[in-house]
Structures are given as structure tokens and as C-alpha cells.
Image 1 (cartoon, each protein chain N blue to C red):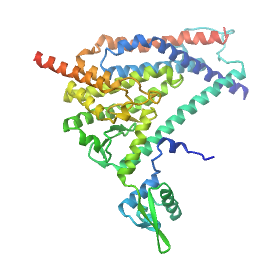
Image 2 (tube, each protein chain N blue to C red):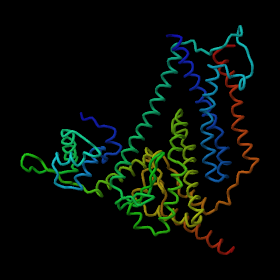
Image 3 (cartoon, rainbow over the protein chains, first blue to last red):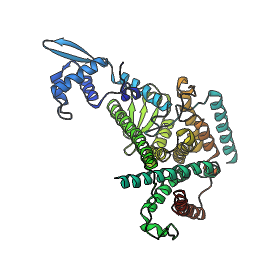
Length: 139
Length: 318
């Protein structure tokens, strides 16, 4: 039986903080190996080589990165663009908005869970037009 | 040890019972209050409703504290005496009942805390992702996604995110209106207000309290609509609302109602109707009414006295 962590069920396409930083590094410099990725991360996220290596491998398993062997080391390339990752994440967010789990952290301009059809929207548009005519007539 | 358990158990049982009962009473009288609230400006109504939701919790907390710390009870509880006039302690004599009170408090606290942590973790994760993948455009962040979407994320240091899909499909005036609405959410700390409301209602299952929460959500959204309307006009904001609603892909709009637990009503419809009727439809709170409201809030603490004696009667202390 496989155990599913709760974070994966809420935002299945979200990455951890270090994973995100590693992705950022690979997006900027495709073709990095683990040592180069570690030195790129150094100023803001100092991490051990083994941590960076396991993070890179996790991202390969999540199909966010691909790897090729060069000499003794693997070099990594992005498999998803920022836009693709964002698109998946936005679908997760909209899913969360539908089930009401994010209503206390996120306010959207229109309610994606609102069940309103085109006929009702047309009726409301006619109401606005009528009010506008009334106001213009009153001036 | 047993004494400590009895005192803690009594405190928990009495506090929870009072909170449960007073919130339940609020639910019973709310249909009368909601009509009055809807007559006021949404910004005022949202503030008043939040205060109203806080009253059962504050009332039960102060009654329970006064039962266990009778030093300050003279101000809110009429003078009375137990048996040989010793300082009273309303102990629940049964260890099982006290234990049950503590257990319920523990479960409730864990439930509130786990939801809070879940929301904090989700917000932090989302914020990190969106800041990393988004482009800083001054007052908002632009997201390279084709779905038309705009939202404010976070409690204290909230940020506005707008997708390129929305920017491409709306004209400059619509975008300005949408941003003004979102800025109002940020200034009013609306996400934090909604979190507070959820916590204050947590003693009862959501199916009983959804009307209170939905009304608060509607007042909050309407308040931001009118904040935008002050700059751009009510009918313009209403039209933008309809245009953005129409942009939502049909799979978002026609959802299985079983999946929608939070907001099943046509909230947009009510917001557009409010805007079309104009801010003039709402009663301004007059000075006399403000005094009455403050007096009502203070007078609700008069209930501490009957609640105090009711609990004592219940515990057969007299």
C-alpha cells in the first residue's frame, strides 16, 4: 500500500522550497551538474552536495528535470518550463478554490465556484443597461 | 493531580458548553439580524458581523474566567453566596465528565491548529511558487498563465497575482477596476478576517454556520466592489464583474454542486445587484445607531450574570 502525503493531495504540482530554488538554477543555467548547482545555490541556500544531489534526483523522478551522463557526473536539463509548472499549479489552486479549502488565504475577484449560467449573466447585463439609461435620463 | 484534572476539566467543559450554546442562540436569531445587516453598507456590515461572531466566544470566555477567578466578578455578576460563603469553585465532581471536557477541548484545539497549519503551509508554498514564477509588475505580480484569473494571497503581507490570460482578455479599465478591488482586499486584511471568522465558528459543524460565513464573504467582496466603485463608478465595476465572470472557462462555472462546499449561491449576482442599486440604497450608520450598537455589544456582557448563575444551578452548587 502506498502512503500519500497530505501536501501532495492539496497541491500535487507544488515543489518544496529547495526544489524550487534548484529548478530556478537549472532554468537559468541548463546543463548544470550537482556541484555547479550547489555553488549556484550557495549564497542564498547553502546546502550539502548530497542534499542537492537528492533534490535533483527527486526532480528527475517528478519529471521536472532530465539528466544525461557526462564523464563521471550527471548534468541536468529542465523538462518543464516556468509557464508549464505555473499552469499546473494554477489548476491545483482552482481545484482548491472549488472545494473551499483556500478561502481563508486567497481572495479571487470572481468566485470560480459560483454556479451562474449565461442566461443569468445576460439578465444582469440588462439590469446594468437599464440602470445606466435611468441615470443618463435623470441627468 | 485529581484536583487539577477536575479544575481543568470543569473549565474546559463549562467554557465549551457556554460557547456552543451562545453560538447556537446567535444562529437562531441571525435570520432577523441578517436583514438589518443587509441594509447597511457592506464595509460596515462585514465589520459588524465579525463583531457579532466574536461575541459568543468572548462571552463564554469571560463567564468561565469569572467563575474560576471570582476576584473581578463583582462588576459583572451580582453579589451572591455559596453554602458558608467561601470562595467558590464550580467543580464538576465527575472525573469522567471533566475528562470528556478536556478531551473535546483538545480535539477542537488540534482541529483548529491543524487547519491553521495546513493553510499556512499551503499559503507559504503557493507564495514561494508564485513569486518565483511570476514577474514583479509593481503593485502586483504577473503570472504567465493563459487562464483568466486574479487573486490576493496571504494574511498580513498579502500580494496580488494577475494572470497574462486576464491581462490579454480585458481592457485597461477592467484591469484597473480589478486591481482596485484586490487592493481593497489587501488594505482590509480580508483573508485574515475570514480566517478569524472560521475560527470563531469552529465549535459548530460548518453545515450549521455556512450562512454566517457566506454572508461575511459576500459583505467582504461587496465592500471591495464599492471601494473600486468610489474610483471608477458602480455600474462600471458591475460590468467588469460580469465580463470577468464570463471569461472563466465553462468547466469552472458549471461545476457539480456536490463538489462545491464553500459557496454554492450566486454570489456574483448579489454583488452586481448591489452595485446596480448603488451605494445610496444603504443606510448610513447614524451617530445614535453607533451608540446603540456599542451599547448592545456592552449589554451583551449583562448575560454573564445569568450565565454564571445558570452554570452554578447546573452544577448544583446552590
